[in-house]
View 1 (cartoon, rainbow, N blue to C red):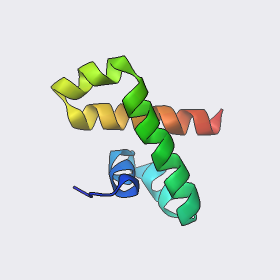
View 2: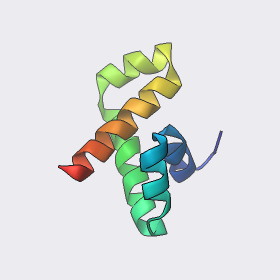
View 3: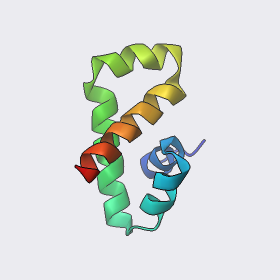
View 4: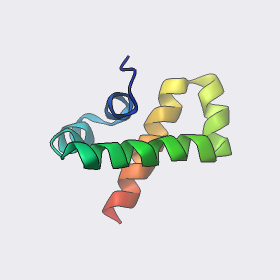
Length: 71
């Protein structure tokens, strides 16, 4: 598993979003990864999910970040 936040964020994305985000400039990837980390830290529901399945919690946070980007 990637150790940096951008790599972890990309790994948590579904394949379609992973490709789209991967094609963006580094600064945009870092901005999205930072938003993803804030989502993971701020949401108590994700804390509970993280205890059951860390990968599922990361994927859900990534989905939320990408959903906000398209709104």
